[in-house]
Length: 109
Length: 109
DNA sequence: ACTATGATTAACCATACGGTTAATTATAGT
DNA sequence: ACTATAATTAACCGTATGGTTAATCATAGT
Image (cartoon, rainbow over all chains, first blue to last red; front, side, top):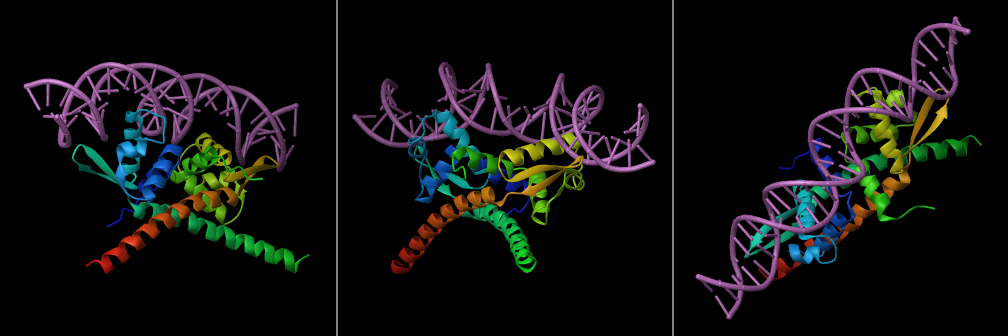
């Protein structure tokens, strides 16, 4: 069951607002991997990465599981879909208005 | 000319991470209006609304213009489109992986 | 000129974010 | 048992958010 509370959308958009976190999600889109591997491209400390991962996880965009002493991270697409849905619904409304304006201008030169 | 720097995407997603700001954008989707009108549904002070508007404006999601003593707010769809594009590109990658996995499982029962 | 209204700015407060270094936990490997 | 590695937690610092009330600015309206 998916949580549709506004709070979850807050967390999802908040999580997407940092370039390192978007980079992590982009990497995860090509397959699950370890924390060390996710950290490699970014020149911040390990604890900083750990914090970013926690934010992504709390937003429901990612999950972690143990594998020996490593943690394997995996993208969770459902929440991302919800964020996308919100934007799309907004753009749908906006585009409808644009279309109406365009039509009006065409009919009333 | 559109600014495609990561910073702008940071600001856009950050702006979308608060329910009042999403509410304001949703209202603006049905047409431009004044600050007072935007504030009405939300039970926070006028300065609080003013701050939200500034965040939305800095993110490029909205613009303000003077009309007498009022300020008229107007949605700016371009930045929203960029945010949507980022999410869509991610979901495209993710869905491709899901499809590949599904195919693999079908061929290797 | 005066007053009321729309909106912002100033000053303040509490909490969250984003980073650091140092310490801790847990497992791998010899 | 010891050591090295993966990762997190703890403690700290500076800045940004999100809210408040009080003060200011600008225009409308009488």
